[in-house]
Image (cartoon, rainbow, N blue to C red; front, side, top):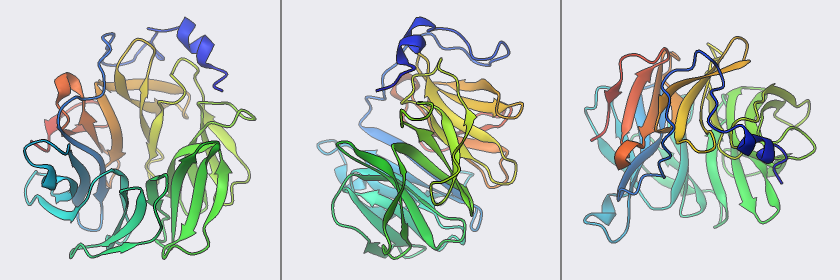
Length: 295
């Protein structure tokens, strides 16, 4: 399915940019820890971070699994929604709502009381994001060959497919979405921007050195910066950024997954995977001032 994969395997262990940062040639699996904090999103409306806390059933405290709120200094942590099998969350721009997929359903959660409104039945929904105006929700769905990006109204109405074989959707601008392409009619494993109807697709980054299913990106609307986690064959997942008009990928941090931006685009929050850490960390765009957020 992925036409760049054979080429990718042949050029393993290379660095995308000669100036790339931290190098990791020691593969490390997804954290085996029973506790994992991930999927963090930073609300500019409140200067609060929401994240998913996964505590595997059968561990010491399975009831702690859910969505948490924390301040950027690590204070004020509290659970806002208890749930399992959560694979993506996002703040609305006004900070009044969080959209999540929980137990394979899309759920809208109000802030600060945590009241939840289920928008869909059970299905393969994941990675939901708000439109900038808060009136629509985009999400990814995979059911067999039915794989793509769909958009619905904020109350669950008018659900429709907009990008067939798209993945890991991000909605930085009112009229545009960013996503990973998996459609063999285009360049598989590349980042594309399209208008919200799915038309006028434009490739903005392609490098077949990466494993094509492992490029999970976020774009900051004001700075136009793009950060993503990706994996080179034989290496661990790492944090990368695009520079020089999206032409060059530069590694920021090894052993890192699921990045997202601070409201001003100067900091990146991510999940550390080194030695099964599984906690949230924050690092500056330039790779400096690394600090741990959750413990």
